Amino acid sequence: MNGVLWVIMFGLFSLGVWLFSAAFAVVGFEAPIFILGILLVSASLAIPFHVLGQSQKN
Image (cartoon, rainbow, N blue to C red; front, side):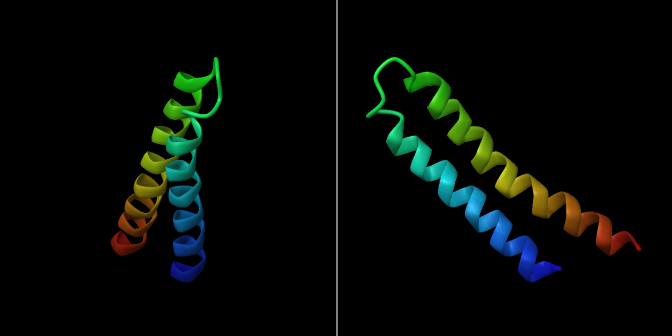
């Protein structure tokens, strides 16, 4: 489970960072793409903390 979770987290984190840089190349949609990047990076950090926190309680 931890390996799959790490791959998903790394993918979300990488996509979020890529969206940070891609936001400046898209005219007219800079803010929504940048905010989506922030949300993806936040999710990539929040998901493992939440899942790993739940698995340690059992």
